Image 1 (cartoon, one colour):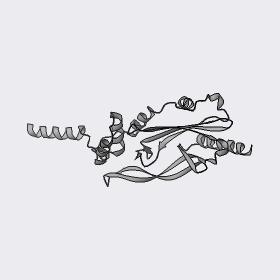
Image 2 (image 1 turned 135 degrees about the vertical axis):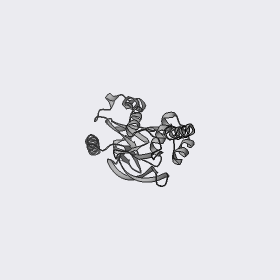
Image 3 (image 1 turned 30 degrees about the vertical axis):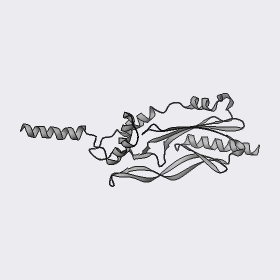
Image 4 (image 1 turned 90 degrees about the horizontal axis):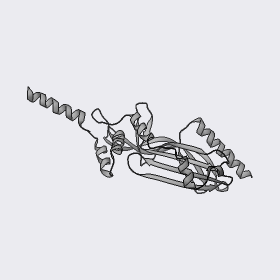
Amino acid sequence: MIIFILIIAVIAAWVFLGNHDTPATKEALKMKDRNAEQKKVIRYFLNDGCLSKHISDEEYESMLRSHIKDFKQRALDKIGLDESELQEIPPVHFEGFLTDKTTYVRLGKDKKFRYSGYQISWLFFSASQVYLYQYTLYMDCDDKKETTNEYFYKDITSFNTSTDTIETQFYDPKKKDIVLKNVDSTRFCLVVPGDKFYCAMQQNDANERAVQAMKAKLREKKIA
């Protein structure tokens, strides 16, 4: 009887205390050094099944929000101008999940997609130029990217939004591996001859009004 109880205890410990990581999780954890939080993120996106442990959708979003601060002043510092010099129209702020082949995606219990990449962009407008600051972070690793650009109105072809089908990394429990999944992504796009600059954004009325204001200002500058 004692032996039977010990066996049950060992099995229970294995079920409730073990990580039971999927092969994809184990492989991802080998690729780069990860801190404790990044390991939780990997398990959130790549663990699946009744025995696999991972944080909840709400816990992941809370973790993400702890990394997203007010980047407006940082953007102004990087651009090197005072906000009083950038009052042609109010500054525009976009942010949202980043969808590309380097990011993981998970469909949450609320049927919303969440990604391991996130992007924040600020656009400022002087009388002659548009200044853009962008910060991209990846929750599953230490990779970060910070970019500043400036454009003369005369060189800008258009401001627009585009919804594109983009491949991103998704854990398929049937194949027990990472596959590329097509997802729709709506992004802001600044177009110049021969190039396009994209910003992750959320679809909402405020962002749509901001894009329309930028379009109106560009038309005004082109006519002047």
